Length: 148
Image (cartoon, rainbow, N blue to C red; front, side, top):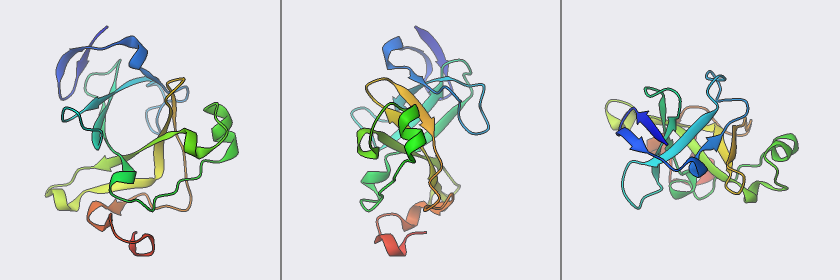
């Protein structure tokens, strides 16, 4: 299937790689289908979450575990059920990144990660009260008690 993207122009994507957000993303509830695209080949650190339907709608995602090894998100049981898994460890996690100018002013949203059941391709954005919404990217990589 061909889609128009914000950063990569027209792409031909495999429909089996589409992520399905039954409830959309906070603020974009009407958007139900997305694809994950890598900004760099062979890299899953910084990704683009591109809407399939809306070319200009794309979010920058970060793999939180690569910069914050102490990140231990625990998804509430009702969300686990919606994602058809029994524990948080069965999910893939990505956090939204707001890229600042300069880049050193960028923040990540640790409180509302995108969680993905890689087997079903079902995804949701969940709320984790124990984390901050605007965590400076520069603070990541430090010990858990020093972050946000």
